[in-house]
Structures are given as C-alpha cells and as structure tokens.
Length: 244
Ligand code: ADE
Image (cartoon, rainbow, N blue to C red):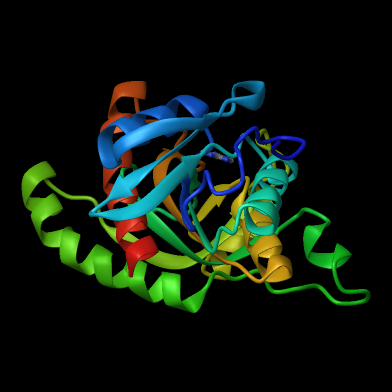
C-alpha cells in the first residue's frame, strides 16, 4: 500500500491539496480549515490529512523543505493518488522594500538556481509557472479578503509576481537579489519552481501562495507566533483558489 514516501491507501487523498512545508503546520491547517479531518499518512513524520472545506473534499500534505522534497511528494500525489491541484502555502523572504513582513506573495512565476528548469527538456530552460486557473482564482479570492483583513489587522498587502526559488537558504549574494529585484522578483523561497515543474510534467495544476516571514534586505523576521497568525490569510486564499 502507498508509495515510497506516502503511506495512504488509494483514494485517501482528495483531488485538491494544500501543501505547507512544515508537518506541524499541516496538522494545524487540518485542525483549523478542514472538517472531519483524518490522518492518512505519517511516513517520516510528514503528515497528511483529508477532510472537507466548505463541503468539498480537501487534503493537506507537508512537502518538507527544498525542491527535491516537494518534487517527491507532488509527483506521488499527481501520479498515484489522482490529485489534480496542489497549492503550496509557505513562507518567503521579501526582496524589494515594497514587500513588507506579513504581506502575501502569489507566485506568478518561479525563477530558480536549481537544475530543474534545464533538466526536463534537453537544451531548453523551462519557464516555471503556475496554473492560470489557480492564479486567477487566488487573485479573485485575495481581492475579496483584502479589505476585511486590512480592517481587522491593520494591513498586509497581496502582491502577485515572480519569486526566486533557491537551493541555498544561506545565500550571501546581494548582487543576485539586486539583479532579480531589477526584474520584478518579489520574494525568495525554496519550493515553488519544483512544484511548478512537477505539475507541468504530470499534467496537474499548481500554485504557491506565500507569506513574507523575513526580509532579505533588512534582516527583520516575524516571531513564531506572528508567523502562524499571518499564515492563516494565505491559507484562506489558497483554499479558495483550490475550490475556484
Ligand atoms: N523561506 C522563508 N524565508 C526565506 C528566505 N529568506 N530564503 C529562502 N527561503 C525562505
């Protein structure tokens, strides 16, 4: 039963999946956003749950960190569990000063220093992009939630644009961030490009909805508690996009 990395039985996952990086966040999303959630896999401590959201079957599975890890889980979900849509909900480092901590960044493209963009089609550096349908649904949902969330919490903007998916968390190369910022890149994280590449190869749909948890220019960072509260907003947008 299951795949090399997922212990669930066939049919245990819904076609719609939320994908945070952190397994504890997967549990929290299941407790907060899913009704009647049940644990369907815990191989290697990577937790997956299935329940319903607004009456529709929906699952959550952690991805772990980095392109290799997210690629394994996304491939197995699309290929073996009939999953159609995966929306990553994660954190990212803001790059330009126009993106502040707590802001949401919806990744309309993912630049990367990983080999994944060049590996899949010989001689071609692939553009790694989300599903247009999910992107549009997330943009619509963000528009709807912006006013009430701003009133409730005193701000937090939703940005839509390219992100940088890096293989290096401790990347001490300001010139790289300068060049990417000059080309409109909003944030750095470690998984979106891998997820978009897998979705493209497997015929699935994917999107990343990120919360700015730190700033690569100023070094400021959210506390662990603030991360969790802000994160809920991105999950609301992601869940609405999955249903959209
Ligand atoms: N995820 C959250 N913050 C990040 C950063 N600064 N770099 C890479 N991934 C991140």
